Figure 1 (tube, helix red, strand yellow):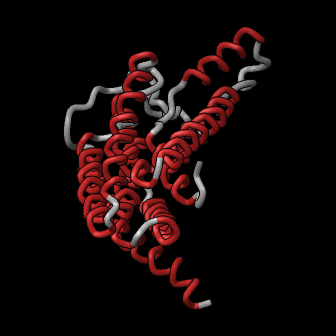
Figure 2: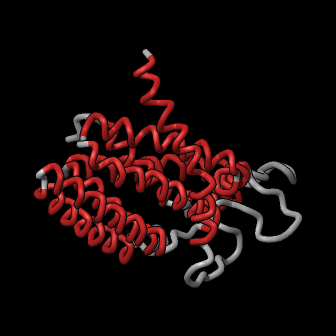
Length: 265
């Protein structure tokens, strides 16, 4: 029993201990590069002017993006998840690379929730950590074919998501495209089935979250000034459905969740 608990407690404690550094990394990353201000209200429904009441979606996203407690919990959960997954599916030499994904993924999640932005420096760090860490694991384990597949998967993801972004630029940003390329490296190292599962899970989670956010935002304020006319209600619903949400947190979550599935396609 004690041995089983150790698989949860040790990585949880280590992840929580890394939270301050992850928080600083995310804050620093947001100071790099150039940022174009978002027009009007931000993508999570936060008020564009002082005095406006934030939506429940906004309050939750703000807490997740800026709270120290949220960072500690996220790092602990991510650390436990990747440790258990590596124990089941990969040699231990791959653990450092996946811990890098867990911690940098939390930083990406916070920046995307906070500013709807995935800094290039975080994606580059994620890609470099995966490239070096998985190379070491492949070399030590004699699985260089897996490493070659990982880079093929990264290229395939980058190309596929770039094509989607060109077709629908309002629904997919270049930060999401580059992030998916980096995540493809990790998932492709395990296998094509895990890669596909990670993409499907990430997009499904984003779709679910988007639907919940759309319903919340469409209902917000309805009825405050008396009964709402059907055309007005329809306009509110359409506007809510078109409101973009940060995709990065869900892509990262989907990637880690896919690895936890022991028998992906």
